[in-house]
Amino acid sequence: MTTYRTAVPADEPGIFAIWSASLTASLDWLRTDWEGIADRHQRTFVAIDGDGVAAVVVYAPRLLRDAGGEPVRVGGVAAVATRPDARRRGHARELLVLAADAMLADGCAWSLLFTGTPEVYSSLGWRPFPLYHRTARAVMGKEVPGVRLGSLDELPPLHEAFNARRPLSAVRSATDWAHGVRQRLGRVFAYEDTGYAAVVRGPQGLRITELAVTEPKAAEVLISHAVAWAGDDRVLFEVPCDPLVEPALARAFTDFRTREVLAMARPLLSDPTGLSEQPGAVFWPADGF
Image (cartoon, rainbow, N blue to C red):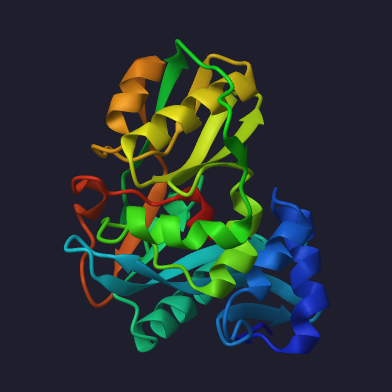
């Protein structure tokens, strides 16, 4: 017989074992994210069978801005995994039902998740929620004097200023910065006190995971420096359409293309349909679940 319930501390070894066996992210990464969730055991749902933890689903409450820029509570579903020998028995489905009920009781307006298997969620009320990033080719780049490595403690005011009314952006707490955001940003370049760019260099070239500026010059300098640092003309970026950054992007890149990120949303207290298509909207990767 299988029991479905919220987690207790004694379940942790079984949860970690499932994550390690089933998910591509490192266990250290997953644990850091999970430890940043307030009341994490109450927001972690497990299936328990005769061999221990058979499946797990977690939700993380976040404050995301609505179309008018006002923060609303959203439940981010994450770390959905089933023990290999317990798959195809409906465990994840049962736990997702519990999680949806809990998010509703928790006052979440809607739920958001990222997945490569949408069919698992569509029958439970989640629907495609289009998020976009852009790719381009770099046509210029040079290292700029004055650009330096940024420290985490100087980023929050710049992030808040750039995203103060931006649809879909998150209102980050100190805990968010110390856990999930910290490990997702990558290398951070800062310019004076007017902006920063978070970047990763990988197999697909340069990825700009986050940008926050208070003046156009900072965007131009930071983008140019990042391109030179990467040494690759392939660029992927999540930067929103914003008058502070578009001129710099137009000068630095060519061959712009848009790609869709596979995300899904489920209405709970309100319907987020169309939110991601609001002018300037962005869900920063560092706020992922």
